[in-house]
Image (cartoon, rainbow, N blue to C red; front, top):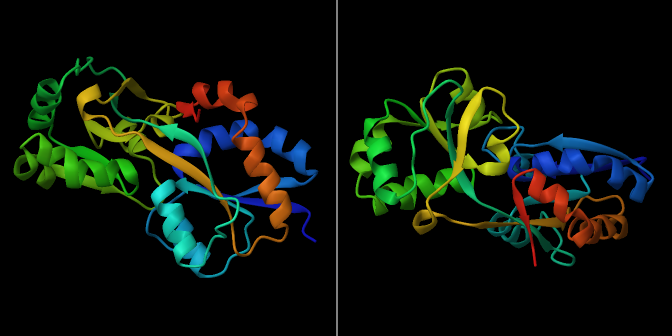
Length: 235
């Protein structure tokens, strides 16, 4: 049996995952190996790694994505559990004035004025490109100047490099990035809260142990860590 406990997690849960590695290693008696932190579409993304049959024990992604993995036979249905909630936020480069977005009209104004907008390949990006821009009535103006950030790179990293002047991502993915400022949730009337869930991979070498880790991640004992990394506990 493997001496490693292998985890694939999307970016939204990455900071919490990294913070909880020591506790998970103590629980499992195994070394935690972070296989990938990219949901994306590239060859090293979670979907493609699972489809290739790469061995892993635990998969943590947005709940709708996990349900699709279960339907595709890549993740076991038994044990799948929502472990955290995540909100979408935005950020600008450090040194940039606060865009002062508090309402939908504020966001509309900033997006129309922005020269380059970034979004991710995950839930926040899908929401921005298929719902948010349309709700604001500015899709035709803002989508052509918006850029998909993929390949495992974070939107915040590209903002910090100065290649974007505004970007959307899950707050838990923006917070760890150096060189950002004014990381702020979307206005309440536009916010979309996503559930993130953990499931046992079809290729797990120890499904019972993976189930034990899922129960641990969902436990109230980790609420403070989730909040500190930009997530909300379930319940």
